Image 1 (tube, rainbow, N blue to C red):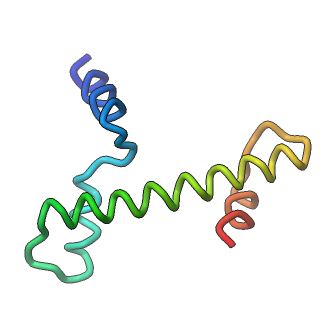
Image 2: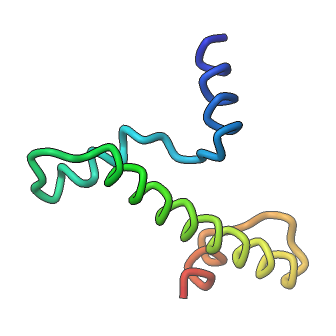
Length: 79
């Protein structure tokens, strides 16, 4: 139940993506240290881009007469 409460808490704050993977991404490319603000900035950019792609992919699926978004829809939507 604690895990669910954590997700609800993140949702209330407007967060979609967890922050730990953002830090891992930055470290993977060679950073020794990562500020909290850098983690937040990357998460914000990735969330905005992800939501934009998801919205376009959903419209593509609807236009094709489908309710299911496919990987092809995502590829087309990402441009």
